[in-house]
Image (cartoon, rainbow, N blue to C red; front, side, top):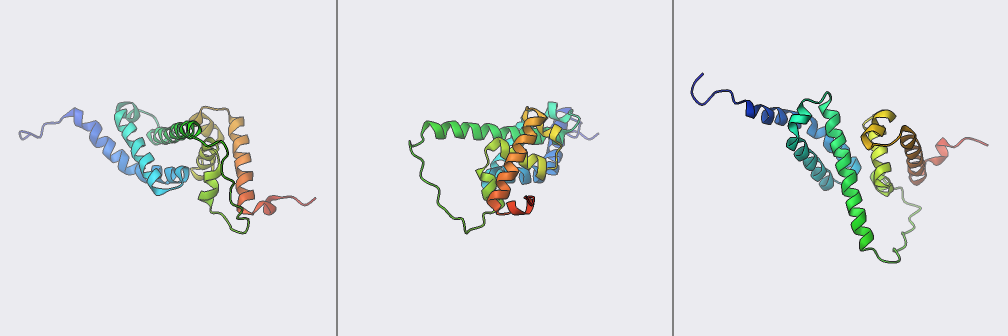
Length: 174
């Protein structure tokens, strides 16, 4: 080997991480966008997730499913940030929240309705129906029971259908 080209095993993890990050970044961003509801928040969440993955790359690189590990980190980071924001909001909130405007004639977009869901329910809907994960996988990711995932998703979907004005499609004739 020519001088200066010796194999440096310490560099392997950096190169492997870069390849991994290029591979999963787009998927993570799409999931993050649905969770956050905006491009800036999704970029921040994706970058925070990748930074955490890099920080613990030795553990991630030997995981059986590193992409699933990354999705878990993304989801848990999103939920932790939402909890932190909620605590801050509650600490500084006004006694009477302003009334919501009545715009019954307007159709709301999916992202606007997703934003109305609590963060945990939103995460469940996105993971379950956007990322097409099983109930078992979502329950494991969010550290809850499968029944919780099923009931939260059912309630969240009912709210989405109602807010999107399509509840009548799913209603049965009496």
